[in-house]
Length: 152
Image (cartoon, rainbow, N blue to C red; front, side, top):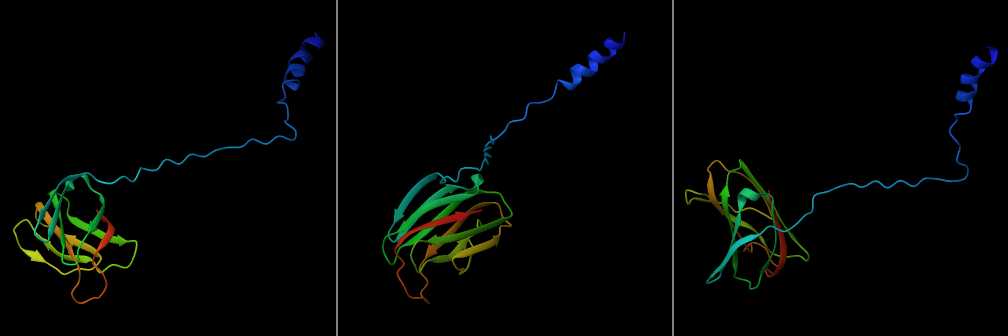
């Protein structure tokens, strides 16, 4: 009977985890981030010195690589189906460029502006907004080139 009580103690004592000597385990942490893709352009039109780019504003944020090809060209970013209370946007250029948000056209056909290379505007009306980008006549430098625009 004495030996029967020692059997469970012996089994528990023998059940130790083996120690690994001299080995290390590498771990890999994967962090998932959303892919930053460019937004689809619904259509592009050209009228005299204006290039009109239409995008669906219901799919914010909007990210576009655009280009102004001549000094007197205006780029109009037409935001269709805008239903959010505020627009935030900025322009990023690879090289110094005389480009700004000149005006914003509201759904009731009124205008506001000028702005700079960034804009923050309360959108009290629902509908189609136009962001008009062009050179500043009060600044020097070239107004042509490629740039990135983000609207949130």
